[in-house]
Image (cartoon, rainbow, N blue to C red; front, side, top):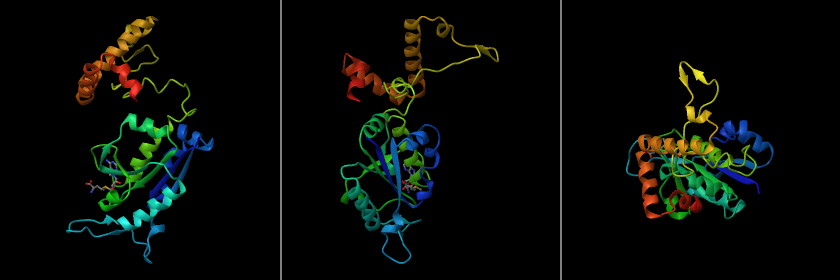
Length: 246
Ligand code: SAM
């Protein structure tokens, strides 16, 4: 199955952009995913092709019009019925690896990119659109956020990553950050690779990696750690249970 990404945007030339290179670019060339940017202005009805207007209630900036966006969304949904429609917005639910996995397992995504002050809220009331945030900071437009979301999905598509297992141990897959990595040279600026990684004892290496993943998560991401610990207390099979639910 080919993952079909339709991106509704004022800047179609931004796609595939960096996704035309490296892993995602190769997958695009191989037809593992398709990229279809759609110009939102094509759904405007006035001669200026307006897509925005002043905010109701006053204030700075402009707001993207619900009627124009709805026509663009309806057009995309007609072409790809049943595909999830997402809108990139800092007001959305934070994107997670679990959601990325769900999306990557599906037929694709229709992604609406905001600009200006954002999107008329009535669009979200009138259409089943999932608001998605990529983090607690403000970008100038949804295109970069859409590229992030797509990159996260594409690398999980079958046959895109080299080793079939290379995604399984990564940060967030088990609810923890991943353990730290090292490579040659064995000594650099007086720092050596942890001895255990050179021991050849796979059980010890595994135990060390688990301990490091737990320590780093606790120190760097207390929010993740709390959730991980909560899940472990609730279920005796702990992380394994979480993995199955993914
Ligand atoms: N006024 C909006 C607010 O405070 O929530 C921010 C609008 S931002 C300047 C313009 C567009 O960039 C948004 O409509 C959205 O599409 C995109 N955007 C900005 N930050 C984002 C984020 N963290 N995640 C997803 N999309 C984002």
